[in-house]
Image (cartoon, helix red, strand yellow):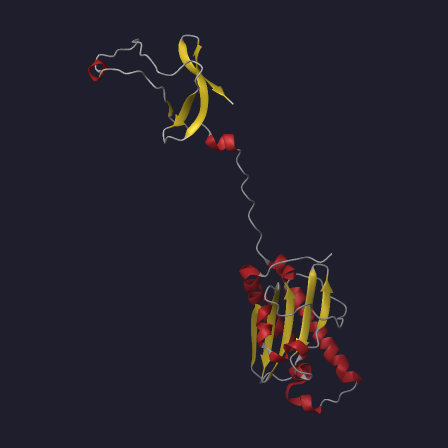
Length: 248
């Protein structure tokens, strides 16, 4: 099963914090000469689209349980120049030199995996990534630029997961009835009354009877203080009080 992931700002920032230091350690152990100026950049893999030579890169893959890491040189002799520096032109293309370069690539990959909290791999295969540089790609791209060449490393976003800070425990959702709690709302019941002389209003007292224009079988509307209708019901009596019996 292939894990899916999205690069995102957090993972990209984590790659920028962890990967360059691992490259520096690898360089101290494997590369001849410290005079060359190297620059290391970590971006989304979409940056590959701006490299005209990126389509022909010879990628090698390290397959991990949680994802894959891919490495490639911009040119055929990029790894030779990275490892042997000024002596690169004098290095013969023989089995011994190729073995050193293979071990150097493997050491770089394992140094990066170690920095990301992943287990090392025993070997690399010649598998290329699918659609490298795609607009919606979910990999981080590390570029190691030296002189007029470069090394590339594509890192699946899922490999960066263990390095992210732990997320806090999400707050449990509150049930609606508990969230509402003891909140109160003023209700209004509109009851159409018969005509009443304006002068008689000042003489009204508790217990006076007012005539209503509504029939007993006519439902009345219960509304909130904002006027929104909430329910309908019929006039009823509960013990000594008038009540409204709600209907579905």
